[in-house]
Length: 181
Image (cartoon, rainbow, N blue to C red; front, side, top):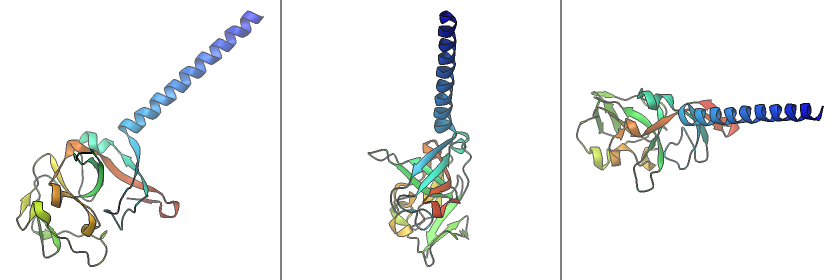
């Protein structure tokens, strides 16, 4: 009888360890390859995202390199701290981009930007200046929604799509502001 109880305890313990290990590996896999949390630090995406907001980011688009205009992406800044930045995709590979008279032009047309605060003026910045810039293959051009307080492609140039970690799809905190992005 005692041998039988020890066997049952061993079998139950083994099953529990196996189940917990599988659950942990599954959670790590989801966090690494599919879905992750991103905490917002700073004000470069005001009024869309605020400092201390919490978002969820899907990562599949970064692996497939399917990035769309207007998506809010998380990417490696390649600065000295390898900070992760969050910005909005404005230009895709091949787009001809120009910033003039405080507006963004894509392929000769003013970009509709309903997410910006009223009367937002977009300055060209040192990277783009007053020229028409063509976004190279394998890159995207990004801007923060808070144009007066955003270090973005106007300053550091286009973002390599290999540096994109995912795109924000859902704000989950603060709870009163839960929304799809």
